Length: 318
Image (cartoon, rainbow, N blue to C red; front, side, top):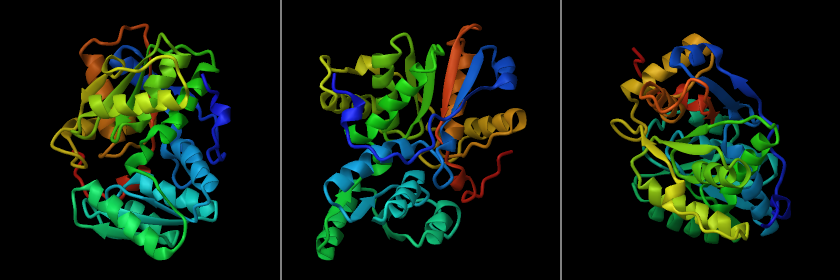
């Protein structure tokens, strides 16, 4: 196995992030629920993407890139954090976002404005269209540029969560399950592969907030990451465990997600968002109530941040 230390990485996040027990929610759900505070990674409003960007932007720097492109929806946490991290490193971020969701100067759009970020919208549902536009803009600039996919979800980005699983393993704490939001596949791929390497008795669970075929997407990213690490095995779809919590659609709040937001706020003083973390935590609640977790299990919820988007969505949380 190739060591993680052999890959270019720029320390951007405040690590390790805390692991805390959710005492009140544990009592409500009848199992031991813990939270990995990856909302406290230290840049922007924090979030899981910073771990990926440590590796992605190091690769961009290695290639001599001056401009960094990425994409997502209008309120993409990943896009906002890419802008913040690129600015910190003296690079120029250009965001080419789908014109989907709240495009007004609210939430992450406000944060991007405060950072004086070049954020553009395309009225398309195709990321292929957006990546083509990145090439057009990048080539026209005459500068070296680097394209980061939606969510930072590729093999290099997934290294950030392979590293996170090593961070958790190094605490010597045992978790039976690690649950994370599944929005583009990269975080879950890193969690599942890292758990296989460093925490073989732990099952990663991806809680889907979109309807894409993540059993295929996540497996592919895991396989590409395993190849980067020169592992002697090839991950398969049997390594990917998914729960569909998309509800009425991506970025459309669900009743279950809204209830999870209220539960977390009322019992633990933590604030989830309706697009990602609320729906994901609703999946953990669902599994607990269906009896998947035993009373003495330790279940870790990977809190991936996203508070910026909470202030962009005008939704009745009932």
